[in-house]
Image (cartoon, rainbow over all chains, first blue to last red; front, side, top):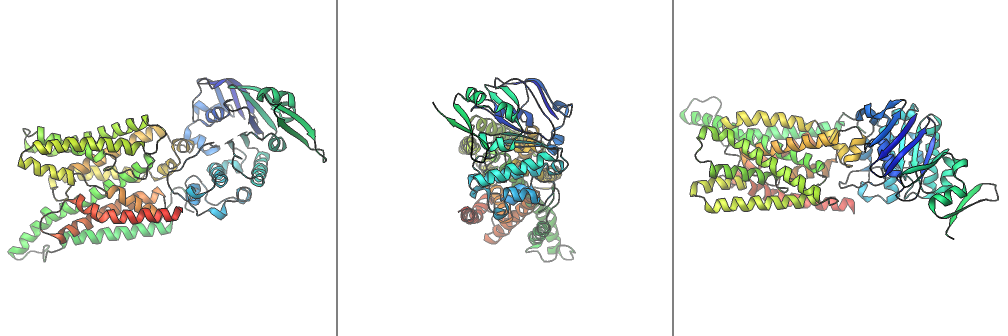
Length: 246
Length: 333
């Protein structure tokens, strides 16, 4: 279990109190600059909080070594730049403890076709898929045991909709065996289909958190984003959120 | 795919091939032109034996440790500074060390010779360290620029070069000849006294660098990826920069400023064998040694006078480097 108490960081995060249980798939939602990436970075251990506590399974992360964290926590960052012409295979091998690509991951990310290409030649979406694979492979043994803490910062950026669905379905499978997924993501509908909890952020604070159906209401979303949101049902009865400006 | 700490079979075979090439070229440098140096029974053979022990063995040791030192430290610096063009020569670490040496030789002529050989490496190291620190600090201010390190390095190296040139201009004939050594490099200067100190220290430092392959593999993706993989990046960065400066400082103190080996060797290896530093680092050490042996052999073939090493490394290295970058471009296209 991940619990965050009164966490503040550099004017970007202001006393945040939330928690995530094993087997929860949480979407972090909010306008640009709300603090989603900052929150993920602090949870990942890349930045140190100025105040408050961050505990994983009742252990304060301040007392968990970086080496130990690296075995069960992974983080796909929003930005990634490469200077060297490494191949996809190399980039995965350098981070993976086990060396074979798990079938489940390959089915979701479909990386095999460009395994021997240079990272510098990949398209934005392909590059993002490799980056997600690298993050997950780093802690794959923990994920298989349902002990993983998976942090993803806009993973579907650049992905075509088929690959978005493949990725999210794969994450749902990982959550089912006990892993925690925290994902910052802008698409309202894709996520209402897959996530089961939402942290809704604005100006460095988590203003609403809870189950998707309670938080993702047109009223709350319109307020937070300062943009109109309405809900309607399609012919098959699925609820769809539509956004528009007045 | 190899596991975290194991080399692939192919990589091991290539390391063996490089090692054999190093041994063959060393033997060639050692015995080339000598007829019977090992079991002397004539006067000329006794002279040959002296040549072997007093000149050839120190030459082989110098060529190996300097070549390996420059190549391995460059391979490390390229990843550390996230710039495939980093080379102690290009980014001004060598010139900082050379400048310190030149200053020491010009201003410290009053120091008894006995101390010179011990103090000189210390000065070279301080020069290397100061220029490394300067490059690091300047490039930090040029945030967001991949070429920041190179620009800072060119500035430092131009400045050091200018000061060395002034010293050269103002010095007497003997000091001037010594200066040429610092500017162009030579593997023929080292003797046993210098090598007994420099040799083991360089080997220990090289051993330390060669083992950092796994952490350096993470650093290809930047500091935060390495930190996420469990590396204490700040401490690692500082320690590696310090060790690289030490290695370059010692290498310069025994062989002057040798250009291009550092840039060329890891670059070529990465181009042909991929980016796995667990292989690239030891392979760079071996190939760096081989390149300097070849330079010695070519120099020997060219003439009796000892040819400045940088002249040869640039002559041989330039075309190979050009080929290598064109090949890279084709891979990316």
